[in-house]
Length: 229
Image (cartoon, rainbow, N blue to C red; front, side, top):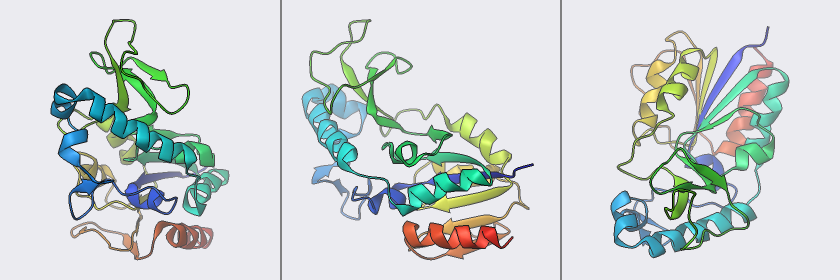
């Protein structure tokens, strides 16, 4: 019977595909103040600006390609039941071939109603245009969870983590909640691998192996370690 491998990924895994990380030291994302483009208040204040920002990000995502870390995780499905839980809004895990991907913060390649977040839609091309409405008559917005909004998939993700036989953390600082709390649901005796150039603070957890490298090198090392179990 295959073991369940649960992987929580953050911006670090997509950075090696050329996508800039969401949270930089200067508080800017692609030259924008995050609070001006990634909050409900920003949308209320200037929806056209927010729409433009995410249209630009969506074009970048569509032009990006999965890297060896994404492809390596997909390949692990040959030997494991692999659940990917990602904080990223890109679709690189899916394009790499992973079959079970849970997006905590939505996915930028979809739109949603601005009055009912459960109404989501595929996007033709790279842009959502102002004046495009859902069937309720509300403006379509990016299918992205903004700062200050609830993260509805957290209970589902927590349940998956509680069933992990092996847990892997890749490219996340564990600084954004509630996603950072998911490691607390992993059973104490479950082996935990952390892949990042800067290992986040994880004191108090048992069975932790730190792989202090970027994601592409780290996933290759992970696959080697798993083959030797």
